[in-house]
Each structure stands twice: as C-alpha cells, then as structure tokens.
Length: 352
Length: 85
Image (tube, rainbow over all chains, first blue to last red; front, side, top):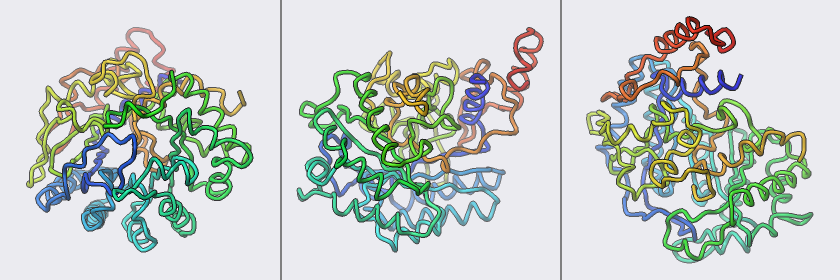
C-alpha cells in the first residue's frame, strides 16, 4: 500500500497535468524576524516578469493543464499587493477560460492582511494562507519584529481573527514556531497553544496547526538562535504540543504532522515542491529557483522566465533537485536542499 | 503516545526537515493522478525523463512510463497486481 501511495506521489510530481508556481511578488519584507535567512535585496516584480507568468500559464492552460497551483511567497507578498492582485486575477481568468482549476495560496506574516484584501483574494480563488506565530505577544514580539523595531503580534492576531470571521471557504495553516526557551510559554492550562486552539482552531476545520522548531536557517543571527540539541528532542516537543492542542479540543485532522494523506508518501515523507519536476519558484527578478530557503545559494537558480513566457531551464542545474524522483531516497524527496546543498544524510531541524 | 499519533514517530523526522511551504493545506495538494496506474513509476525514471521544456512540461510521459513499469513488473512476476498494474 505504501508503495502505491509513493508511486502516486511521484507520478504527481512529474505529471504535465499539473503546474505549481511559487511566485515572489517582491522579496522585500515589512518584518525582520530574528531567525530569517532572506536578504530582502530584490524589489517588486516588474511587468515583464508578470507578463511572462501570464504567457507561460496561458500556454499550458490552452494545452489542457488540469490544475494550476499558485502560491505567493516572498519577502512578504502583501508588500507588493498590486502585483499579487494583478497576478491572482489574471491567472484565474486564464485558468477559467481554459477549464483549468486554479488553487491559490499565500505564505504571509499577516500584518498587511485586511478584510478587504482577503475578500478580493478569495474572489480570485486564493484561499489557502499560512501565517506564523511564535508564541504569546511577549515572545512573538521579540522575534517577529517590524523593520522599525516594534512587535507584530497584535497585527498578526488581528489578521487571524479576520480570517476566522470571514465567511469564505478557506484553508488556514497556523505555523507555530518554538525553541527550547519558548516551549514553556506554549504549554499548560494558560499556555499559548490552548489559547490559539480555543480561539481559532477548535471546531473550525478551515484552520490547522503546524508546530515547527526554529532552526539556524542561514540568517545573520544564527549564532544567537536557540535550537534543540537534536531533531529527536524537537520531535518530542512537537508531540507534547500536539497533545496540548488535542486536549484543548482540536481534531487530529487539524495537524499537519498527523496527516497521512496525499501530501505524504512512504513512511510519511512528503515530497517537497523543490523535489518536483513540475514545480518552480519564480523570483521577483524572473530567476527560476527550486527552494524557498536557499535563495542565496547559486545552485538554487535553475533558470529564468522570459517575458515571452519561456521557462528557460538549465537542465544540469535542475536535475540534482530531482534526484529523489529517480532514487526514491526519502530525504532527497522530502528536502532536496538538505541532501543536495547541505549534504545532510539525516533530516534535522536545520531546514526551515 | 496517543492512538492518533501512532505513525508520528516515523514521519516526524522527515516533517521537521520539510520547508515551510511543503506544509501545504489539503486543498492545495496537487490533483490526485487518478488516471495513472498506481505502479512503481519511480523505479523507471531517468534523468532524460525529467528534462523540462520551455513551456515547463516534463519530458516523461508518465502514463506510458507507468504502463512500461507495470509490464516489467508483470513479466517479472512481482507484486504487480497489488500495486495497481
């Protein structure tokens, strides 16, 4: 059975029925999180690249593309709201005209997510949101700070309440970061997991939780970032956090780490988008990458998108990212950056 | 460990290594390739199958590939009937 599931996963990672683009409308950000690995060097996506994305997707949709998955990343995508809206509306129009299903989503810090923007995104079938919390206000505000230095908790919480109150069909993933020094703030009857579970997640299947140990992800403050001594320690903490949320009334289906479905293959290993042959990151300057963590590693640049919509892939640069599809190696499938760029033989919490 | 987490240990190490956006909501998952035989497609893929064209299409014809893998599996008397071939 697991072989079947894995084979289906791999088939899904090479099929031309599906195209997955992770688009950086900008690589600027309004926050400066303590552990962030990005450099914020690239500004807003120019019209030439936007046109290239339209032409690429149109070409594929006209040839029978069944599903197109659009995910906004960054930087903070909402910093370039005009680009987000133009792309979402234009790509949905292209998909609808050709019978292609579009699945839209966004990884956002939430600070700039207003009800008006949410309504407009939902109208464009951008309905999946990943928003990160680092703990209660006192903890979150020390780590996820605005460029001017103030904390972002209040704005993020307001965004989550906006999502909660909206009538739309949504898929909201609350990613909760923790480390050995903050774990205590999340646990217990008065802990933050109970608060989030009760206020947002419990009895609302639109919301899900994902607990993630902070790692040293390549940012300038890595040396000061507290991390677990081993992945096993981090795993034990995740189990405790899940128990806490289950005790608060959340359903097992609301945890990424408890799902055993289409996202997960043999032994529960996900196939990361970076390991898929039909998934690409379009950076705001038109460079094509595979991984959203290793933007500063030149090996992550595998090609470029032209204004004409040509995806010009440097095949020798691309193929190392796809080795898991050939070898079936779980690590190469679940995190090719670990196996290819960082030469790790074992999964660790160092991946973001 | 609770019943609901019976498989967590097997998956948790891998999950911890998955970048942020790999943790995508269910609704965002790629369409299930239901038209494909659930064969061991992976075993037959080569680098040549994974060349990407200017329109982003992958060279491999997964359906033909899956069929070939099935045929090989059947000829070899493996567990083909159990994996969708």
